[in-house]
Image 1 (cartoon, each protein chain N blue to C red):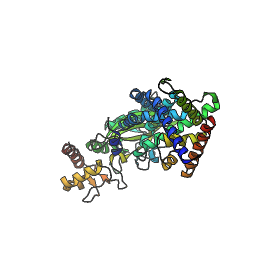
Image 2: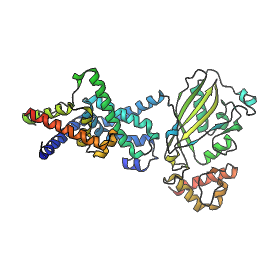
Image 3: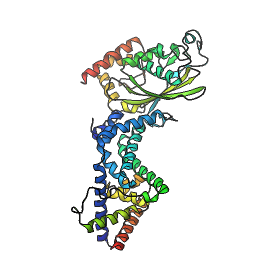
Image 4: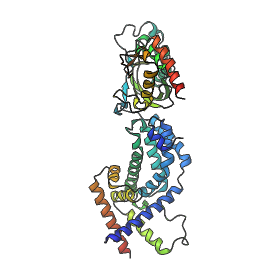
Length: 178
Length: 266
């Protein structure tokens, strides 16, 4: 199977090889991204699978194979948004951010740190959807304002506002908790 | 809220998101899920009627299969009438057989379900007939690898989309394409194919940035400059892709030189 760099540098490579290579390189990272946006690990895998299936279907229509990673990021963000929208309509109590400290024991982390992490997790979960997306793209994917704006199809000013408001909200939540 | 508190908060957010993502990733089944992706995509493609052709792809150059229809002498007469297909063949079956015949360079078989004479079918611009066009395609190592045909649900006239991958100049690299086959009352009334030439490095809009075609013509111009006019119509000293010559001499030269070019690059 060719490496990703080979795939994007040789855009005439067959679709199966190209998508398989992208899958191997980005699947886990995208599952992580989706899990931060949709609150459910199984759903996260489904969202990522659908993103890759969409890429596979549209492969011949991509104007630029280099844009495939951007396409995947966007598809996962949109998939997470759609899932949350449906979930909130159906049952707001189902919202939860994965993981719930699985695999960890109190021996590994002191109780205070665990409480703070849980509070922060809850606070992120409670953010408006757009603010949360900006936060995840900024601090998980380490995207720049311009990249976030491109992924979410909003202006850079909007990204800046959402990020600022999200951090302010989180800061208030953490201070109140103390 | 101070700058330092924001920085500390950002660090904690980053750590938390990374940690939570890591936990989710640890259970991601990357090794086996790819097969599911392909199966899901193929299933979706199979059940999905694509409304528009690859014309939406800016880099694609559509090559039209011209099937001369009404008004052409011989339509629905003599040979074509003798070869009327069985009524129980579905439009998808008819389109599939048509594409399979093209892939096999079998002009007579391709014409079986078409309401025109075989010598009135064309694939490439300027070709005298489908038979000669397919002969050139075979010599130029243009191969079609058929995939699924879908659609064909119209009550009287229907369009079946057949997808395929293709190679050119014996390259291992594959491009994508589709043929829309219009079927009416058990007969093919028209077909149009779109192929993403960009992937082969062959675009008519001066697409010389990819190596397959430019590499070949560059080699041809150096190795056999005297034969270029016999192989490509209306071409200058530096070959570009206008129209291939479909003469027996041209086909023989294409056949020989593509082989030679492939051997020289191995």
